[in-house]
Image (cartoon, rainbow, N blue to C red; front, side, top):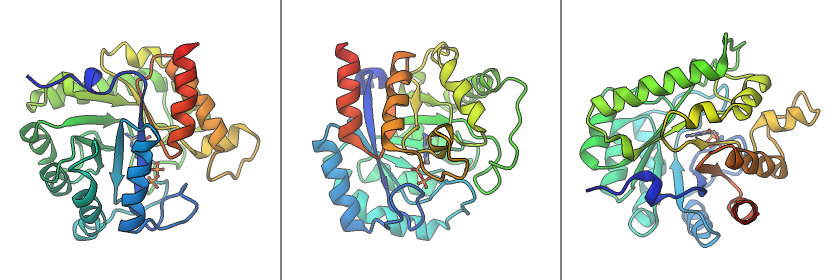
Amino acid sequence: MAVPLEERFPRPSVVGIVNVTPDSFSDGGVHLGAADAIAAARRMVVDGAALVDVGGESTRPGSAAVPLDEELRRVVPVLGEVAGDLAVSIDTSKAEVARRALALGAVMVNDVTALRADPDLAGIVADGGAYLCLMHMLGEPRTMQDDPRYDDVVAEVARFLEERLAFAVAQGIPEERICLDPGIGFGKTVEHNLELLARLDELTALGRPVLVGLSRKRFLGRVLGDPEATVGPVTAGVAAAVLAYERGASLFRVHDVREHVEALGAAVAA
Ligand code: HH2
C-alpha cells in the first residue's frame, strides 16, 4: 500500500526549485548547467528541503515550449545524479520526460497543465506509482498574462482542480498520491493571486494537500509598489508562505530553501 502524500510530505514541507533552463525568471539569469544544478539540489536537501523539483522547461510568462530532446538533454544528467538518493519531483508536462525521470528514481510529477497537455502522462504516473501535483493555469505560458479574467477566481480554480483530480483518479492515479496547486501567477492578475491566498481554505476544502508556488513571483514586487517588477523579494515570498501555511497550505515550492525552512519552522512552533 502506497504511503499517502500527506504522510510522506507532512505539513509544512519545503520543495526546492532546481531550474535547468537558460531562461528561468528568478535565478538571477544564471543558467544552471548540470553540475550547478546537482550541487544546488544537494544543498537544498541539506538546508531542509523535503523534495527537490527539477525542471527543464521554463513556464515564466511569455516563454515558449521546449522540444522533447532539449528538455531531456537538460534534465536527464541531473536526475541521473540525484534522483537515486534525494526525493525528486520532475517539473514537466511531457510523458516521455516523466517516464525517464521516474525510471531514474523521481517520486513525483509536477505538471503545470494538470494532465491536459500530454494524453500519455496520466498512465505514466499511474504505472510508475508516482505522486502528482495538479496545477491550475488559465491559457498557456506564452499568452497567459494577457488580460486574464474570472467571475470568481477562487471558485473557478477550485472547480478546475476538483475536475482534474477526478480525471486523474479515473485514470488510475490514487487520490492519496495527489496534491493541488492554485498556480499563483499562471493567468492571474495581482488581485487574483491575492484573492486565492485570502481564500485558500476553499482549496484545502477539496480534501487534498495544497502546494503553493509564491517564491520570487513578480506579483510580490508589484504589491510592494513596483508596477514593472519581474521578480519579487525573497522576504515577501517568505511572508506570503507563512500566511499560506496558516491558511492550510502543505507544500511550498521555493528557491530559497533555508529561509523558508526557518520561517515555517518558527510558524509551526508559534
Ligand atoms: N511555478 C513555476 C514553475 N512551476 N509548478 C507548480 N506546481 N507551482 C508553481 O507555482 C510553479 C510551478 C514558475 O516558477 P519558476 O520555476 O521559478 O520559474 P520558471 O518557470 O521560469 O522555471
